[in-house]
Amino acid sequence: VYAVPGPGQDKENGFSRTSGRPSVWLLGSSGHSARLAARLGLPFAFAAHFSPDHVDAALRLYRDRFTPSAVLVEPYALVSFAVMAADDEHEALRQTRSYAHSMMRMLHGKSYLVPTPDEAASYPCTAGERMVLDRWTDSVLHGTPGQVTERLNRLHEVARPDEIMLASVGHSPQALLHSTRLIADAYDLPATPVPASTH
Image (cartoon, rainbow, N blue to C red; front, side, top):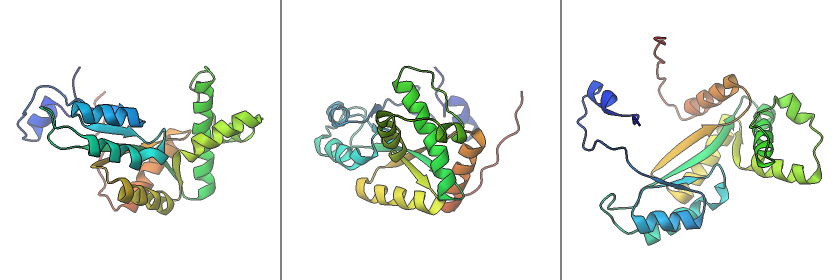
Protein backbone atom coordinates (compact mmCIF):
# COMPACT_ATOMS: atom_id res chain seq x y z
CA VAL A 1 0.00 0.00 0.00
CA TYR A 2 1.40 3.40 -0.97
CA ALA A 3 -0.50 6.25 0.63
CA VAL A 4 -1.20 9.44 -1.32
CA PRO A 5 -0.07 11.93 -0.27
CA GLY A 6 2.96 9.89 0.68
CA PRO A 7 6.76 10.03 0.98
CA GLY A 8 7.28 11.06 -2.65
CA GLN A 9 4.89 13.99 -2.47
CA ASP A 10 6.22 15.04 0.93
CA LYS A 11 9.81 15.11 -0.33
CA GLU A 12 8.89 17.14 -3.42
CA ASN A 13 7.03 19.67 -1.31
CA GLY A 14 9.63 19.93 1.45
CA PHE A 15 7.65 18.23 4.22
CA SER A 16 9.18 15.94 6.79
CA ARG A 17 7.20 12.83 7.62
CA THR A 18 6.10 12.29 11.21
CA SER A 19 4.91 8.74 10.55
CA GLY A 20 5.53 6.11 7.93
CA ARG A 21 1.96 4.88 8.16
CA PRO A 22 -1.20 6.40 6.68
CA SER A 23 -3.71 7.65 9.23
CA VAL A 24 -6.57 5.33 10.13
CA TRP A 25 -10.14 6.63 9.93
CA LEU A 26 -13.45 5.02 10.76
CA LEU A 27 -15.95 5.41 7.92
CA GLY A 28 -19.62 5.06 8.72
CA SER A 29 -23.14 6.26 8.05
CA SER A 30 -24.91 5.61 11.35
CA GLY A 31 -24.95 6.37 15.04
CA HIS A 32 -23.29 3.01 15.72
CA SER A 33 -20.21 3.95 13.68
CA ALA A 34 -20.13 7.40 15.33
CA ARG A 35 -20.11 5.80 18.78
CA LEU A 36 -17.41 3.31 17.75
CA ALA A 37 -15.15 6.03 16.32
CA ALA A 38 -15.63 8.03 19.53
CA ARG A 39 -14.87 5.05 21.78
CA LEU A 40 -11.72 4.17 19.81
CA GLY A 41 -10.57 7.80 19.61
CA LEU A 42 -10.33 7.75 15.81
CA PRO A 43 -11.04 10.37 13.17
CA PHE A 44 -14.58 9.85 11.87
CA ALA A 45 -15.62 10.06 8.21
CA PHE A 46 -19.40 10.23 7.84
CA ALA A 47 -20.83 8.97 4.53
CA ALA A 48 -23.52 11.59 4.04
CA HIS A 49 -23.75 10.52 0.39
CA PHE A 50 -25.77 7.62 1.85
CA SER A 51 -27.70 9.47 4.55
CA PRO A 52 -27.31 13.26 4.50
CA ASP A 53 -30.23 13.75 6.91
CA HIS A 54 -28.29 12.17 9.78
CA VAL A 55 -25.08 14.22 9.59
CA ASP A 56 -25.77 16.51 12.53
CA ALA A 57 -26.92 13.75 14.89
CA ALA A 58 -23.98 11.48 14.03
CA LEU A 59 -21.33 14.18 14.46
CA ARG A 60 -22.91 15.38 17.71
CA LEU A 61 -22.87 11.81 19.03
CA TYR A 62 -19.24 11.40 17.96
CA ARG A 63 -18.11 14.61 19.64
CA ASP A 64 -20.13 14.07 22.83
CA ARG A 65 -18.75 10.57 23.37
CA PHE A 66 -15.21 11.06 22.10
CA THR A 67 -12.45 9.48 24.17
CA PRO A 68 -8.90 10.76 23.57
CA SER A 69 -6.48 8.12 22.35
CA ALA A 70 -2.88 7.70 21.24
CA VAL A 71 -4.15 8.47 17.74
CA LEU A 72 -6.22 11.56 18.43
CA VAL A 73 -6.54 13.99 21.35
CA GLU A 74 -9.68 15.78 20.12
CA PRO A 75 -12.50 14.66 17.81
CA TYR A 76 -11.95 15.21 14.10
CA ALA A 77 -14.70 14.65 11.55
CA LEU A 78 -14.99 14.60 7.78
CA VAL A 79 -18.30 14.48 5.91
CA SER A 80 -18.70 13.17 2.36
CA PHE A 81 -21.56 14.55 0.23
CA ALA A 82 -22.76 13.40 -3.19
CA VAL A 83 -23.18 16.42 -5.48
CA MET A 84 -24.24 17.24 -9.02
CA ALA A 85 -24.12 20.83 -10.22
CA ALA A 86 -25.13 21.80 -13.74
CA ASP A 87 -25.91 24.97 -15.64
CA ASP A 88 -29.62 24.48 -14.91
CA GLU A 89 -31.75 22.51 -12.46
CA HIS A 90 -33.21 20.25 -15.16
CA GLU A 91 -29.83 18.93 -16.31
CA ALA A 92 -28.65 18.46 -12.71
CA LEU A 93 -31.76 16.38 -12.01
CA ARG A 94 -31.28 14.31 -15.19
CA GLN A 95 -27.68 13.49 -14.23
CA THR A 96 -28.65 12.75 -10.63
CA ARG A 97 -31.45 10.45 -11.76
CA SER A 98 -28.93 8.46 -13.82
CA TYR A 99 -26.88 7.92 -10.68
CA ALA A 100 -30.02 6.93 -8.75
CA HIS A 101 -30.75 4.29 -11.38
CA SER A 102 -27.27 2.83 -10.98
CA MET A 103 -27.78 2.55 -7.22
CA MET A 104 -31.15 0.87 -7.76
CA ARG A 105 -29.51 -1.62 -10.13
CA MET A 106 -26.86 -2.41 -7.54
CA LEU A 107 -29.48 -2.94 -4.82
CA HIS A 108 -31.22 -5.41 -7.13
CA GLY A 109 -28.00 -7.37 -7.58
CA LYS A 110 -27.39 -6.09 -11.12
CA SER A 111 -24.23 -4.51 -12.52
CA TYR A 112 -23.40 -1.00 -11.40
CA LEU A 113 -24.25 0.48 -14.80
CA VAL A 114 -24.99 4.19 -14.99
CA PRO A 115 -27.59 4.67 -17.75
CA THR A 116 -27.72 7.79 -19.88
CA PRO A 117 -30.17 10.45 -18.69
CA ASP A 118 -32.47 9.57 -21.60
CA GLU A 119 -32.38 5.86 -20.73
CA ALA A 120 -33.13 6.65 -17.09
CA ALA A 121 -36.02 8.97 -18.05
CA SER A 122 -37.64 6.34 -20.28
CA TYR A 123 -37.33 3.48 -17.78
CA PRO A 124 -40.79 2.11 -16.81
CA CYS A 125 -40.62 2.31 -13.00
CA THR A 126 -42.80 0.34 -10.64
CA ALA A 127 -44.11 2.15 -7.57
CA GLY A 128 -41.46 0.46 -5.41
CA GLU A 129 -38.67 1.35 -7.82
CA ARG A 130 -39.80 4.96 -7.91
CA MET A 131 -39.49 5.13 -4.12
CA VAL A 132 -35.91 3.81 -4.35
CA LEU A 133 -35.06 6.26 -7.14
CA ASP A 134 -36.54 9.18 -5.22
CA ARG A 135 -34.58 8.23 -2.10
CA TRP A 136 -31.26 8.15 -3.96
CA THR A 137 -32.09 11.31 -5.90
CA ASP A 138 -32.83 13.13 -2.64
CA SER A 139 -29.49 11.99 -1.17
CA VAL A 140 -27.62 14.04 -3.80
CA LEU A 141 -27.15 17.80 -3.41
CA HIS A 142 -28.12 18.72 -6.97
CA GLY A 143 -29.07 21.85 -8.87
CA THR A 144 -27.33 24.99 -10.06
CA PRO A 145 -23.97 25.86 -8.47
CA GLY A 146 -25.71 28.39 -6.24
CA GLN A 147 -28.28 25.84 -5.07
CA VAL A 148 -25.66 23.19 -4.37
CA THR A 149 -23.34 25.50 -2.45
CA GLU A 150 -26.26 26.97 -0.48
CA ARG A 151 -27.18 23.47 0.74
CA LEU A 152 -23.53 22.65 1.46
CA ASN A 153 -23.13 25.85 3.46
CA ARG A 154 -26.30 25.15 5.43
CA LEU A 155 -25.23 21.58 6.23
CA HIS A 156 -21.77 22.82 7.23
CA GLU A 157 -23.25 25.43 9.58
CA VAL A 158 -25.33 22.77 11.32
CA ALA A 159 -22.86 19.88 11.54
CA ARG A 160 -19.57 21.86 11.59
CA PRO A 161 -17.33 19.11 10.17
CA ASP A 162 -13.57 19.72 10.11
CA GLU A 163 -13.45 18.68 6.45
CA ILE A 164 -15.92 18.19 3.61
CA MET A 165 -15.38 15.73 0.78
CA LEU A 166 -17.45 16.01 -2.41
CA ALA A 167 -18.27 13.10 -4.70
CA SER A 168 -19.67 14.24 -8.04
CA VAL A 169 -22.23 11.74 -9.34
CA GLY A 170 -23.92 11.45 -12.71
CA HIS A 171 -23.62 9.74 -16.07
CA SER A 172 -20.71 11.10 -18.08
CA PRO A 173 -17.14 12.04 -17.12
CA GLN A 174 -17.78 15.40 -18.79
CA ALA A 175 -20.78 16.07 -16.55
CA LEU A 176 -18.83 15.08 -13.44
CA LEU A 177 -15.92 17.35 -14.35
CA HIS A 178 -18.26 20.21 -15.21
CA SER A 179 -20.03 19.78 -11.86
CA THR A 180 -16.73 19.93 -10.01
CA ARG A 181 -15.65 23.05 -11.89
CA LEU A 182 -18.96 24.81 -11.28
CA ILE A 183 -18.79 24.17 -7.53
CA ALA A 184 -15.13 25.21 -7.38
CA ASP A 185 -15.96 28.42 -9.25
CA ALA A 186 -18.93 29.10 -6.95
CA TYR A 187 -16.51 28.96 -4.00
CA ASP A 188 -13.98 31.05 -5.94
CA LEU A 189 -11.31 28.36 -5.62
CA PRO A 190 -8.12 28.87 -7.63
CA ALA A 191 -7.68 26.80 -10.77
CA THR A 192 -5.20 23.95 -10.38
CA PRO A 193 -3.29 23.05 -13.55
CA VAL A 194 -3.51 19.39 -14.50
CA PRO A 195 -0.05 17.97 -15.28
CA ALA A 196 0.42 16.40 -18.69
CA SER A 197 0.32 12.62 -18.70
CA THR A 198 3.71 10.91 -18.93
CA HIS A 199 2.23 7.70 -20.32
